[in-house]
Length: 241
Image 1 (tube, helix red, strand yellow):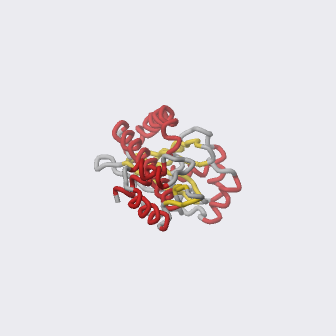
Image 2: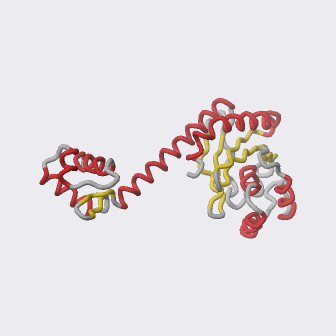
Image 3: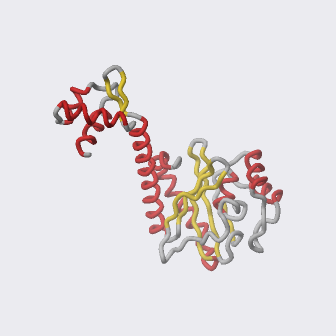
């Protein structure tokens, strides 16, 4: 396995491919051993051979892509954990992709627990700050398409009552203003979501607090927004995860 990895690393360092003899030399392997491993790696799809030169194959590229995605997810998780500790609130990251709300990362702790997902987040975007923030970033057609699939339903006494009321609220939402929601998704909980601009991806980071701490919500949201602004360049590549 270690010898095969050395060969893969040697191939990866050669954008325009390399012959077996060169790869054997760079990997410190005897030529017969290198030939055997190269054939095996090619058969498994980790390498491909073209005119006597070896290149990375589809299997190796998938591994590379998966590793890069995991690294981006780890970067995002670390940032959320930092803000959870600095601000003293649970922090959520979500985006809107392929017509669905996707909560990707949550950083909470026993002292700052996240909101329990008692009603499916994807189906109740109208009721929580994350969903409202993501929907506010879509155009009218995309919003109506979402509501055709997931129509407004009252899940607490404070939930918006119908699609038209929600659409009017979304129209009034300031472009970079935090979206505030008070007990619309879960009784006893208030939430705020910050819109994030990252290319064509609608994304948001959000926080939640017990309703008896509602006075902390907007200052905490502003603090998070300031922190995001400072680190957005670093996190931009992570937004697409």
